Amino acid sequence: MNYRETIICTGYSRLPDGMAAKNLYGVMGVGFEVDPQNDCILNASCTFVTNMCNDFIKSILEGHDLKNGIEEPIEKFEKRYFGLGKKAIISAMRDAYNQYSIYKAMNPPVTTK
Image (tube, rainbow, N blue to C red; front, side, top):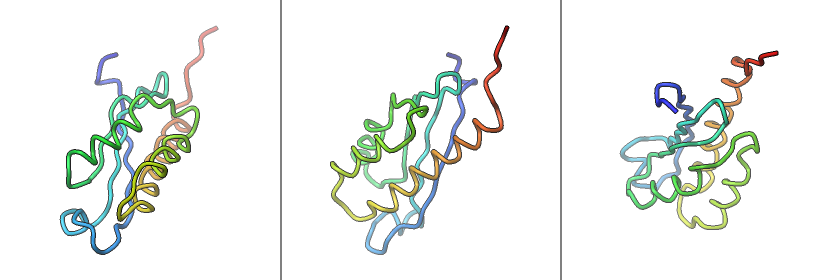
């Protein structure tokens, strides 16, 4: 796949007081790079301060098929992440997924007969 054919969908939410990321960014951002032909997340990132936490989110999201919704990676995240901002991160993930759903509704697949 040519990377010029992928799309980026982002989601944002407010962070709680006490998170270092709030002082830097103000909000939590989560982004997906998606292959719209097969709905697969190829890359993901978020506005965590540490690379370790960013890599953690990436490991949960990368390879996920968005045709199956977003709840599976959210459940994995909820079971494994114990820190401030859990709800904000989940909200940002849902927002990014909603942006992808909007994209898909506006760009239905082309079928050939």
